[in-house]
Amino acid sequence: MGFHIARAQVLEEDVAALLDRHFELMRAQSPAESCHVLPAEDLAAADVSLFALRDQGQLLAIGAIRNFGDWGELKSMHTAQEARGRGAGKAMLTALMQEARAQGLKYLNLETGSGADHLAARRLYEAAGFSECPPFGDYVADPLSVFMTHTLREPEQQGM
Image (cartoon, rainbow, N blue to C red; front, side):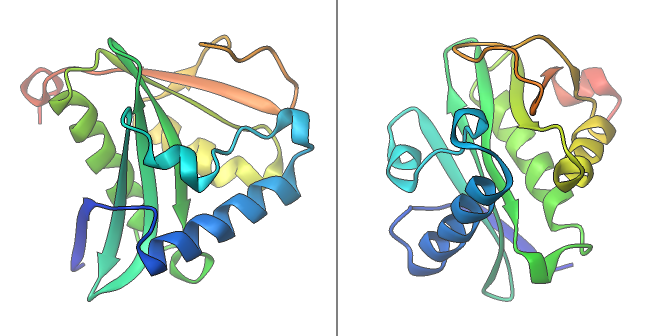
């Protein structure tokens, strides 16, 4: 695979378009009170690092980390529908975990949906070492949400 992952800006045309698709999909899959997708303008905040994954210049996936000091939250992980099954999501998740380590974060948290629409995402996170946890930050228990966490270690401590 010729994946190239780099920091991105919400104003990049292809990034903005994929963020819009992600936002619309998340809003369609969950009622407003259970949908925690960040609008694009929030992904431009100073505490958020947004990344884009491209293959031969074509944007396939996006993902972000919101830094809360000792810990971070994965946000807006999304692989374009037409690019699914090519390993882009796994590559993006691996890169985001490496970035979190580089930022000195001790652990990463995430919130995702509990339904069938989010099953592939939950399996991806579980395969990367994430496990379910109680709600964190400002989240509250919600039957439509699954909360997950992963303690970060240096690569050599993971046998990499």
